[in-house]
Image 1 (tube, rainbow, N blue to C red):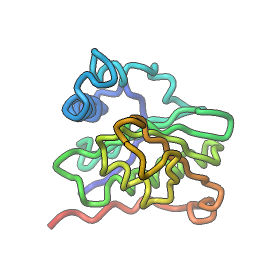
Image 2 (cartoon, rainbow, N blue to C red):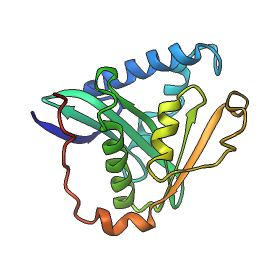
Image 3 (cartoon, rainbow, N blue to C red):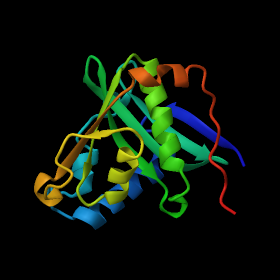
Length: 178
């Protein structure tokens, strides 16, 4: 089994599974809650160049040439990258892929000069909330509050303490499912 991270663009044809599945996932969970146009409006809110170096990046994880996960970041401010579009193929979830993807995105943000990560997720995505909370992200909202009222759940993480751990870190693929 061949695992490979590639940095590319949202316009890359290999990004299509990620984008199509995000639209399906967000529309299934939220419908028109945030916008009458549904998830497509959110995914088209930023131009592809927002996720391009030197201030951003777009990552795909390929396994045997097939897109299985991905994510992106863009500039939030001079020291902060904003993570977007973090996704794992539905049939491969619960295997640690999202965590490994998150680590790769953090490492790349560090390489591009960022020291902090900011991100938001929706209130109907408890698995995303758990991913961030169990991987060193701090909630910027009241965890005991009414999440539907809060709507956009913001998180942050300081990367300075991670730099030595990431120095020269090599990609080690997640173990395959039995």
